[in-house]
Image (cartoon, rainbow, N blue to C red):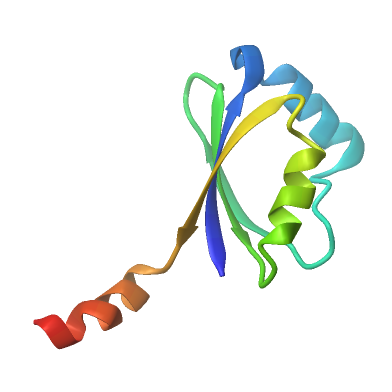
Length: 90
């Protein structure tokens, strides 16, 4: 399953986040895979796509970052998967 993770950097400050990322890496537990990410132009939020079969791994990962980041987790499917799910209604 893929998850869109919206990260809002506390105090709108990206520096502590990027410092930890530089010094320690993504800190994702085994079984949680980083797919891609985008950061808004004001550098205070990140939109990250992660993949895992075990939703609990996201909570484990968040615990390693929640002192610096507020998280919103949204389960997502691809556009192709969505089209297939609604195709019988068309």
